[in-house]
Amino acid sequence: MLLLAVSLSAQNNTSSPYSRFGYGELNDNVPGAYRAMGSVGLGMRNSKVINPSQPASYSVVDSATFMFDIGASGMWTNHDDAYGKRDNGSGNLEYLTLQVPFWKYIGFSAGVMPYSMVGYNLTENDTTANHPFTRQYYGKGGVTEVYGGLSFNIMNWVALGANIYYMFGEINNTRSLTFSDSFFTNVNEQSALRVSDLRFRYGLQFFHTFKEKHTIVLGAVFEHKSRFNVRYLLDETIRRDTIIQTDDRNGFGLPMMYGIGASYTYDNRLTVALDYSVTNWSQINYFAQTGLLKDRGRISVGAEYRHNALSKKYAERMPWRLGFSMCDSYLHEIPSKEFTVSLGFGFPLRNIGTVINTSFEYGHRGSADTLEENFIRFTLNAQIVETWFLKRKL
Image (cartoon, rainbow, N blue to C red; front, side, top):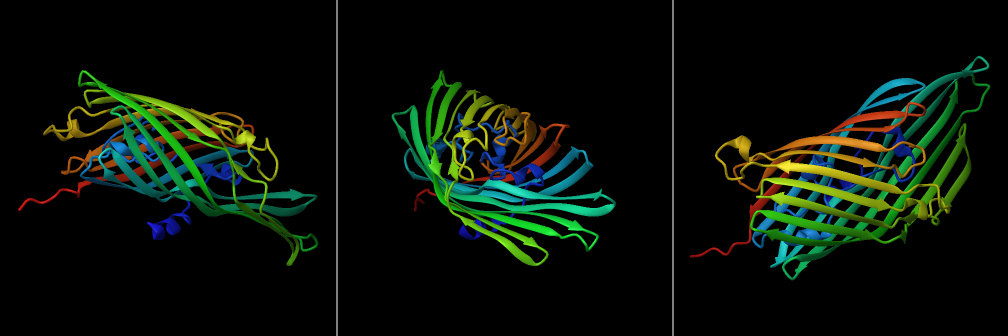
């Protein structure tokens, strides 16, 4: 997992120019199975799904079960602005998680996931006073997090949990101005944010089954505001001479976040879920100033239907999912709300707990006045559930 964490930190899973701003494109860290349900998760509690977005959910793991989830994603993006329309593609391995029982009603989970992603490459050709020039914007990197989480039940209807994250990575942004005429001076600016810090998330769930067919789960999560250990470096070069070098270790933060969610399951067949969360980005320091980012509210709704997990008919054993989400961007550069619609399917293997999940998401953000972005994201994950901890009888 440590080796994979280093590998994942170098992956590029976005091609959005909007990832240039802030800490990049944020990831909500829901498993592939729930992405097809609008990326719900705070009120989800399933013994066959690892759910890192809700630490309180780990205690649902069966005492004899080992769970493993690995996911990859690919994205096609269309951009439309004053310079025309462009298509881009990106994708790679995205996350790895595992979950095991520590004791009865105590579960442990660990994994590596992206916190944010940066990836874009834009070139603009223009002319001033009959002198052609080229502007180029290029960025890559992101912030990766390795987490460990523990959850336990108190009584038979309440679960508590917490995640600790080690966050690391580097965000690189480059912009250059190049003239065809040697009379003019070319300028190149490179900046980097180097991250290394800890973060915590706390989770709570209430759950109960009525008349053996009706299950309700209520969940909540909370992250406190904290200082973010970021080292900022700036290097500006004219021709071949570096004229500015900056090294700043202060002035960055992580926001307070809170969210609630609920789900209802009927007869282990139909599940509907709703999430709402708020992240107070406007309250944190970013380059030693508050207000450079804005608060992010997010609402998600989703549903899953599986007719009969034990049926002899394959289609009846498959889970079918759909969802919708809408959120505010934490960037002032995106004035309109972002929305995503999604659907997906699960393909169970002979082992009843192991499923290959697929999800398809269509999303829109930005506006025609600045930069309009439409994307289609495909996620494929293997959700492996195995029985490892049984005592063999002679």
